[in-house]
Image (cartoon, rainbow, N blue to C red; front, side, top):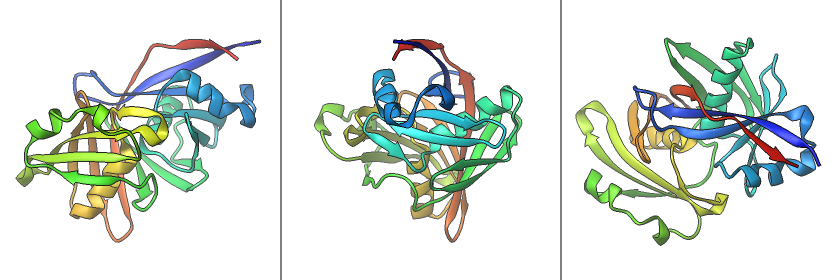
Length: 225
């Protein structure tokens, strides 16, 4: 048995650096492909990234239930992590395809096809209070996204996401989902999701959107494999 060091970042924090969706980041050379899903499940995050080539930004993404060809918070988090560790890549490479990376001040963004990512069951609720009152235990299958306008004129949304199909009761911040919502609504969005994470999108019709936010260091972990 071997101790595996896992870097952790929090993706899509609020402007004060709070909240954010934890992301495990692992040196891909240390974990063979047949073991990657089990390690992701043991870590317990919605996704874990394996960096197979830092210089080129080549990644693989796993949840507790399998490999994902694309996901938003892992690609944004990995882009920020690589930048701070001497690899300011302009493109992330994942199985779904190349992902363009941009950085503006302290915000990292990725550009993706809005058809990528999981299939969600969308619920537009009447108020932010209704979104916050939702009981996660009521959602025991699939992927469900609840949202309501906080300020429609400014494109600000309050949202929560439940993803038991990925082994996640509630996902704190879901990048691919907000790119899909951006395409549905046909406009740029500022989404406040989960406990208080912030995601920012731009609509790039006909097929793309960007999603970005702040990324802050999390607490590193060591697990035995």
